[in-house]
Length: 337
Image (cartoon, rainbow, N blue to C red):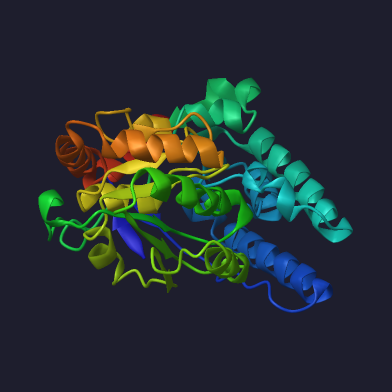
């Protein structure tokens, strides 16, 4: 895909589908193959390219970046996420520990090879231990919302008292802590109902917990929710709880805000850049069940909860458009040309 830029310049975007299914050896072979495909593409196009921008997450693109460096091209490393985001719970086998350390080493080499690094929050400089690269870091985000899809279809006052979590049912998301907070919340506000949307390895344990605590009449386990159905669910919630141990800039938070749904979240990743407590959402000190329960009650008792929802919607309408995302990247790239 070619995107117009300046006269006689163009931006070409290409990608390779990453699949890591099968046994350990297949995963390794697939990973190396993807790296080689990217590297060969870079070498082939070297005469026509001035800057290579790598959008990457937890799979460090070491070989392609070395290829770009050997071709004497400028490298921009745009970090969508970091391998440092992986929770300790996911590194509990010899193979996982080995892979984690290899990727950490590869990611550090990527930082050194890069002429420029783009993060979507200044908070990530500290969280991802990037202080020594601060002089080549710029801040810009690539997030943009479809406001025709994610919009307010049910006013805040029309919604029932439904509190929800929507996301992956995994350890790093802190969903178990929210689940364990529900009995205490219910004791203090017995009229509340709860929604857990998503799927993952913790689903069976969560279902069993609700049965043991006699909470099945209070909680709906919605299972996996498609992206098309998401706005409908968001427009039913009075509060979305995101108790993550680690995050980047979660789309689910921005989408909830666009639907006029206040968000209660932990202060990790870029979340504090977006949520100002009591103004555009709510921040909790940590994600212990006790802290979650206290802050759910605090948020629901907030005198201007409806106004907070409106403020959240106004913020994402202003800051998380396609035009804003393009403007941020354009300004950075033009300085490098």
